[in-house]
Length: 128
Image 1 (cartoon, rainbow, N blue to C red):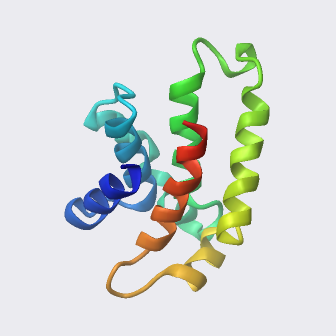
Image 2 (cartoon, rainbow, N blue to C red; image 1 turned 180 degrees about the horizontal axis):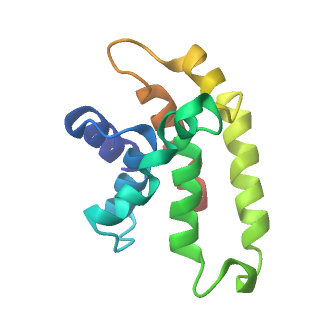
């Protein structure tokens, strides 16, 4: 379900990878975010605009926080390990956490970074 929603958002609304993952998670997992809230992750697309950490990964972590943290991350037992495990799984599945590497591996002219977004959704679903 998450992948289908993400594909629709990415291709039809022209969101970047970060915006797409959070917007799709918001719909599928009823996170209660507004369209304005999705803008909070806009700068993570394109690996924070410089090819660094993948925006889809950043938003997967943001969705995880929204779903699992009740007050603060430090007060949420097991949350740090949950995040670390998601990042490790992301790297294992996609081969890297860096946008610059993932672009070389997955980006196409027709669908841009859709393959990365869909794989990120697969990883996120395990944790939601």
